[in-house]
Amino acid sequence: MNYIEADSHADLFVPHSFEEHVVDLGEIRMNYAVVGDPASPALLLIPSQSESWWGYEQAIPALAEHFQVFAVDLRGQGRSTWTPGRYTLDTFGADLVRFIDLVIERPTLVSGLSSGGTIAAWLCAFAKPGQVLGGVWEDAPFFASESQPACGPSVHQGMGLTFELWNTYLGDQWSVGDWAGMQRAIPRVMPRSTLQGLARMFPMPLGERPADPPQNMKEYDPEWGGAFASGSATASCDHENMLSNVKVPVLITHHFRQVDEHTGRLTGAMTDFQAQRVQELVRQAGQPVSYLSFPDMGHAMHRSDPRLFAETVIEWAATAHPAVASAGRA
Image (cartoon, rainbow, N blue to C red; front, side, top):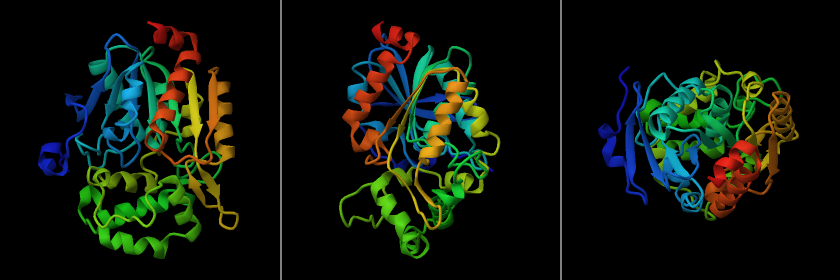
């Protein structure tokens, strides 16, 4: 199947506050924004599933006071190449190894939300030696985005139902595009407790349900959702093995989560037990790990409270590890 470049659906995009750039990584062309002094430490921001780089737009100015910030569109999102059949943690991670080599060109901190957080973890484990100084894993679904996790609920007991809805009613590469049908299906197929939890994870004005797809969804290939729901996105990257190979200090932020006592269904990125196991594995790998719980925070702190997100990243980066602190004073 042919890959899909941004110019084939250029009418979808809207202008943003920061200039966008494109780099050819070989298999794909990756879109990104860069803000801040090149003499400052580098920080790579990795969006979540269904989020383009501009999801970080409100947090970037505060971060750019301390870092040169690089925010990317992952393959299948935003203006980067859409690659049918090629959405896995390993391909996302390999793209960013090339991006660090070709664009950042020096060691970097990495920070990712949700699926982007698991990709940040991949980089913390498997990037080239010296490429990554440390990682911020913002409400990342460790174990809970796998089909057969080593511990706790799987993707089928969590966000998998949402991803299946997206993929079914919107279709790979928006080949179906039945947004209205998906809205009608949501209350019919989603458990009430899940809907209540999702409203806390993704807060929006009371009563607001978009009649048309929001901008971030227009820029997203729903095959991503299908790949995570089926397990193909994570099949080649066992989370327990990945976390056991982390080579740099990390910060984990853990936001709203609930587990239905009757069904075991998780609404949130991961359970408390899964978060505890993540910390154990990183410590066993010999790396410092900081854990911050924000049980009332929406899924994306960098959108819900961009100032708090920036302050959290800046404070951790200055104190987490001698190499990171040294870079912060440069």
